[in-house]
Image 1 (tube, rainbow, N blue to C red):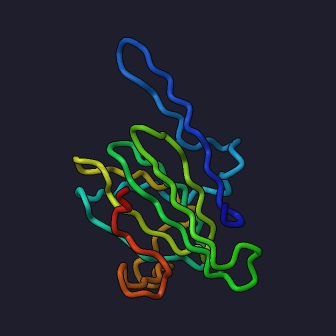
Image 2 (cartoon, rainbow, N blue to C red):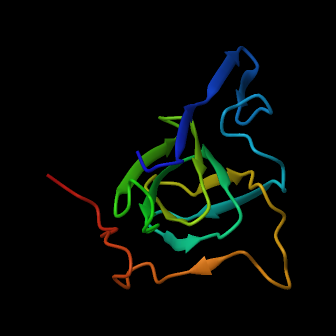
Image 3 (tube, helix red, strand yellow):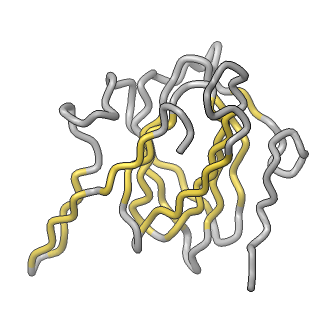
Length: 151
């Protein structure tokens, strides 16, 4: 696993009415501080990536559908420099993924329906000077191929 990345199995509490999922708690190892909560979606087959933050850590959970979350450690001083992690998250694997600053990340919807991600970043989005740095999804800057691996 890339240095600083944490993956926590989400506790799901089902009963006859439905279910409850504890995504992130203040006593979790991944919790640093609260910035905001937002949700984003992707349609089947859509890739959203690559991007990274200089200050912000992300805490992502897929609450509907399935996503392939991919992380790339481009931090030259990191013990895991150059490493790529694939995390399959969502209905079939409810996990929280903690992504530290400077780790490049993106995701692809791999379910047959729109997938929904809830993110609890450590910083509020700053509209004047966003802490958001983007790279092309298929440009080659990140050594990863988003195509499905059949076989």
